Image 1 (tube, one colour):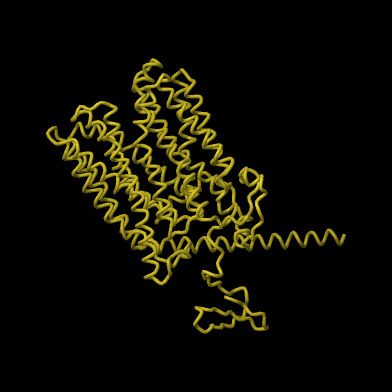
Image 2 (image 1 turned 180 degrees about the vertical axis):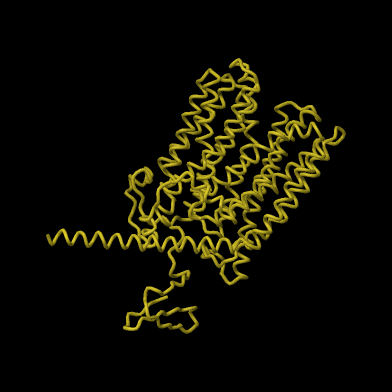
Length: 537
């Protein structure tokens, strides 16, 4: 698009190299609507492909700490109880408090990450995590264990939300699926390998403290990498990466090299000036959005099913097959493999389906869709989710009815692999969709997602063993299957009404932004007039 400088302003839009330009006269130049094209738009990110991949890898490694710290602890519960002279039930309270903080803490950190930037929150959370592990390795009282485990959770759990926000900062919707898939693979494989790893560490001369020493050393290594190399990606701080960061938002390498100057897109510079204060209660506003709330509840139902399967699997493998704790831990490896493969495969398929839908809808390869309220985002993302829900429900039902003493142990292992593949594929889809719905607050919406599903998952895991004892495995997982299927009508309503709700939110945000801009302009004029009056005096 170009605008001539003649007395009567004209907007000239060149549709393609072969087409004739279309000229439209307008009375007011300020009412011209910019028509974005691949050539005229600033790139979504200035980071190179290799650096973008490295950023996503660092975000994934950081996010693995939360599930790793959760599950590496389990093999040592009995030994810790014995050393601290308390009951196993008392040690289990530390697991409960850990999960409570795991759900609540990210809602606070996520809000700060969306306002202050990713780097300061990364450094703060990893520092808390690192120091908590140091204290856990040295402590020798139950009270210290309880408090420090809560601190450990508060530090590690936020990295999942910040990591998802980091990936959203540097990836466009058309490629976001594959990066989110790899991110989810790292997050989901950690719970599968952590118990085996924790059991092996507990056999060393350091005993159960070895797990905490390992997490402390890993925290130090990660903190060093983030401090020295990790660039700031928060779009309200650096825009598409073209705005040089300052202070703590600047990595040590950037400080030393003084980072070469780049051409700053004025749109990003203006957005940076309008930065708002961090609000940890912002999550309540996000949950109130209809399209977001529906996705959160649907994901929460399936996440509860995920917890019911993993908790029930552990107890029944011991009861039905009389396996030791170490062997039960090894049985989770197929689940970890299914989670990793499912995240990567489904992530790539999500991108493929998105680009295909964008081409069929006249949006090219979809790379320039971004926050277009007219693009049917929900239809583009929901095309595959029905298969994932169906496979998850069917696998959960069969899983519940196959635990019999005369059935080979290979059967539940295969079912667990399939469950990991399908359910993690669903989580990848859901995470990508939520970030697409709230790209400007991607860390906050991920934190809200974490809060909702952790609360529902904790409730499910707390009662599943009691329900199994009361009505048996088969009927318990029939109920769980029905709960998973409840997500289908929710997702159908998202498909039918999601774009309308998203459009209404977009219009409301546009109106609010215009009012804030007008108010800022008025305030600037008043300040300018006041300054001139002072000079005249």
